[in-house]
Amino acid sequence: IGLLTVAYSWPKVMVQVLNPRLWDAQLVALDRLLCFGVDPNEFLLTVFEGSPAFVSFLLDRYYHAFVLTQSIGAAWFLCDPRARFRSAFGAGFIALWMIGTWCYVAVPAVGPAYFFEDLPQRLWVTFPAAANGQAALHANYMAVQGLASGKETLIVPHFGIAAMPSLHVGIHLFLYMWAVFAKSRLRPVFLAMTLLTFLGSVATGWHYVVDGLAGAVVAAVAFCLAVAAAKLLRVRRAPSKSVPQSYNP
Image (cartoon, rainbow, N blue to C red; front, side):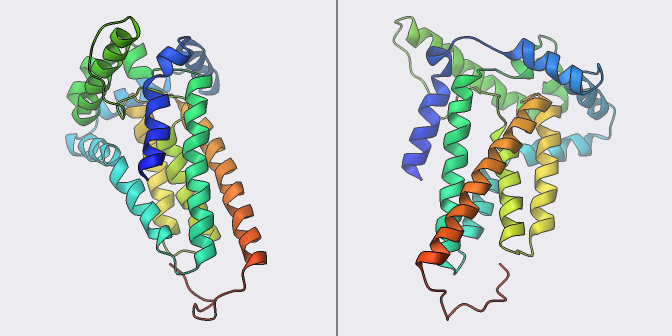
């Protein structure tokens, strides 16, 4: 886990150094094309601004708890008593993070909260947890710029800004697809988590709609790799007699 964190965090936080071109304007245009001329970030923020306060509060807190929810989901499948399922899931999970990391470098984007000047103040009112996180990441982003220009400054490696693709969406979708493959009883839970994460990623200004769609593609690729690994391990290993065939985690 430590090595994965390093391999993910440092390239992400240094994206602006590795590839300074930003694609936000193109992603905004693509979003509006897909949504028939409507800006989805503006639309969803307006909807939640007019909703009861507890609704936006719950979505804000749910999205802010991403590290916890994806960690619990990953831990659940890594405790599977079937060794080949554990190994295959782990391989796919790592592949998802690595593919997503280098997509950040290939198509750099900071996301709606930083691209649209009017969003930050509105987000502070409706989604304060998201806005607080965005402010912390922006401070670190500016510190990286200072470091790149020769200034001595401290940076936080896990505070990188990169919107394309949305690994928040990708990871929860991967968990859902694996739940289907593993015949887990938690399939509805992971599906609900995926949909809420996609909604939250756009409403809170972290991501564009196309970021979530790209995250879904990354998740699908990682899932296919994980399934291939599971099938390969099934050929190489005899099935354990100690695990009932009807096991449903």
